[in-house]
Image (tube, rainbow, N blue to C red; front, top):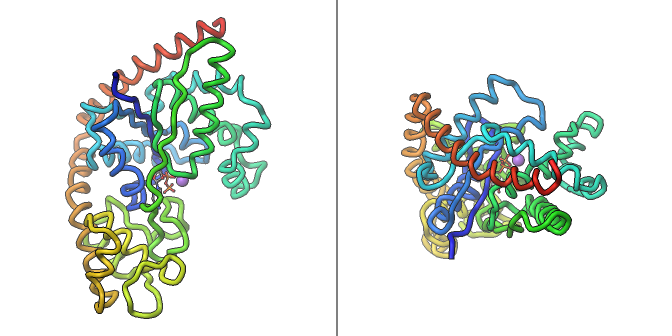
Amino acid sequence: TSTPRLFSGMQPSADSLHIGNYVGALVQWRDMQRTHDAVFCVVDLHAITVPQDPAVLREQIRRTAAQYIAAGIDPSASTLFVQSHVPAHAQLAWVLNTITGFGEASRMTQFKDKASRQGTDAASLGLFAYPVLMAADILLYQTDHVPVGDDQKQHVELTRDLATRFNSRFGQTFVVPEPVILTEGARIYDLQNPSAKMSKSAVSDSGIVWLLDEPAKTAKKVKSAVTDTGREVRFDRGDKPGVSNLLTILSSFGGDSVPVLEERYAGRGYGDLKKDVAEAVVATFGPIRERALELLADPAELDRILSVNAARANEIAEATLADVYDRIGL
Ligand code: ADP
Ligand code: NA
């Protein structure tokens, strides 16, 4: 009878979100607000599992929150807050650490990837325990649905295992959440290197279109996108990764399906396609960027929104944590 609860979050790990984050997460979050009691989090405690610059992080947290709102997350209908404003995340994570097997945590493939990039000895315990903190994020809100990219699916599986284990040892406490895998068709690739996913952590940002880029810069990046040999505008991830990526972007921003677009560009060149992609992205990102900059120009108002939302989040989270402590004898 009640509206299902949704929880999702993103790390504040760059000054701006990019087309991939927008298409692959924000647009879908925005739509799911209609069918869910939605909780959206800026997961800053996750961001410190790799080295941070404090001043930069502080700014990135605010910018991420402003971009959620500017893109259509409604902070009066949904709960939009900063993770570190709700102490129960760290508190529940500790409890869940005590029921997580060392071997179980060692099997998380994202840790292996991230740790091997840093050198396993340099990786922190925090990075190792990242999936357990993510489980705490989700379970605190008695979440039914967790929209995630498929790279996070293993973490949601762990979350389900921990919820089930806790419930069977200590009595029914947590809702066991279901993953909602965000549409794979919406995966966006780097404009300069279309075999790699567009990512905040790319070495160079020349192939990344940031939500907060100036419109002229966005247009320039799109027009300099690498394309492929031949002249035909056709979707083919293997032979035409650059053109396929542009078609995916245009389809996501303009609403027409890829086959409809292929027909529209029959007999026309890559230049026309790029021009239209640039226009479509600028038309959507322009107003979102303006709104985000407005929010950032009024820090007191942004703080007010985040503090009202943190209070709402705290109320739910503290109730869950109190139940957990009680059940385990604390
Ligand atoms: P990044 O890889 O840039 O650091 P995150 O891992 O923080 O991005 O991802 C945040 C959200 O954005 C996730 O839900 C993820 O699925 C989505 N996302 C990130 N990059 C892309 C992309 N290139 N295409 C589609 N969705 C993406
Ligand atoms: Na990432």
